[in-house]
Image (cartoon, rainbow, N blue to C red; front, side, top):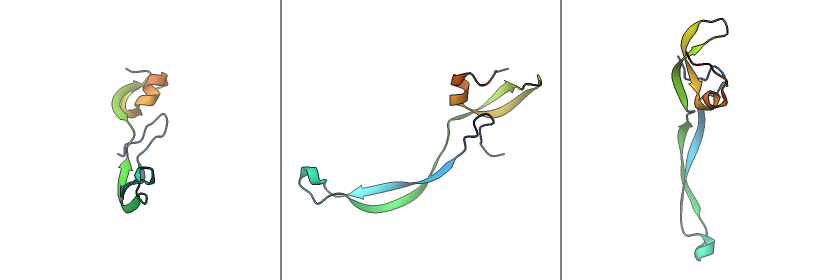
Length: 76
């Protein structure tokens, strides 16, 4: 089962981590050069909690903390 929020639909997103080297122009250098880009994953802040569904049923599901703070979920 993948980690996707059942309320907001948040999921892991692919991206890159960029590494620079050199001295900035402001401090007298020729600027920052790109050295390499490595792949990484941005993961949402999900919690595996027990929630009460609209039908009255109680289930354990992945929910984002943003949805919990906004009050979109009723905890069981």
